[in-house]
Length: 205
Length: 187
Image 1: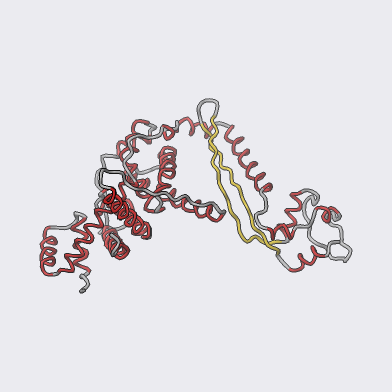
Image 2: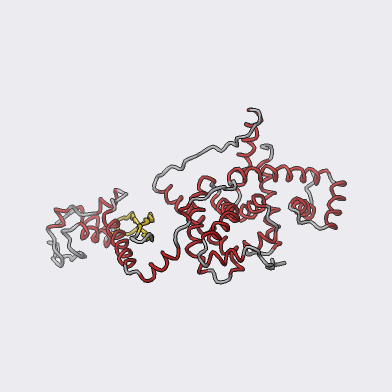
């Protein structure tokens, strides 16, 4: 089969889309009389167009009704956002929640847990204390707390992946306004930074 | 050839929405919602998620329309909102899949008064065409959807996508060529 010329194909598409001029239509008609391939292409495009339009309209139909949730009182929300000090409080709560969820998030990968010292081992070492072999190992924060343990793991491991799951919470206010809180849940996947850390863990003090 | 702008009868409605007019907002929503959903479909290629994303888009329109400086450019502005929301939703979906959630597959068979065999054939054709459309890249799927869903002219599509009219035409030609290849012997 002889391929249809690009110019003719363009004319066919323009014709189907109603974008063709009179002159171009005459040119296309002449080409269609001359070339059965062009005729076939026109028929193919015509039938595909018809089914495509029908299919698209079936998955994206015109809506007859709309949810009233879309008509939030914008002016109320905006003015309150600007001058209401509660927004500051709400933001602080959101930030605190994000922070809390970050620390409380369970470790998704076993490898992270394997590099964490067990609480009993960690409890034997205090900040700045030299281990028996004389090598000072970096320790930050209160190592007896879970946050301290996480910080140790952070310092001595590297992040290989980070997933953030954002939830939006709508909180109704006293006067019918809404506050939008973004709460981010962050999960991190970490791996040991070096061999020495693993050695250290295998041979605790 | 670059799309030039003409007077748009929707501009006063957009202006009214900017001023907080609920009725105007509903009017705008009723008239413009389908192409907005077309854009979302053009980006996501997932009909099941159109509703959620379009709700998000219209909520954002209501909240952010005071930031629209030039009312004449409301259509590209709305297009960008819809497109960005769809892109974000696509990212969220990718993330959910990473976290192990399973996407829900649904069958969409049109309900009309045809014989069972005709209906099945028609449904299969629809599915094949939709799959082919969804296999296109957004570059071709977006103008194709706007053209076939809303019957927009090249100029209207160019205005929204902010590209020359020739580019729209080229993308529509290529989209049809790709669809024809994808559907050879199937429809």
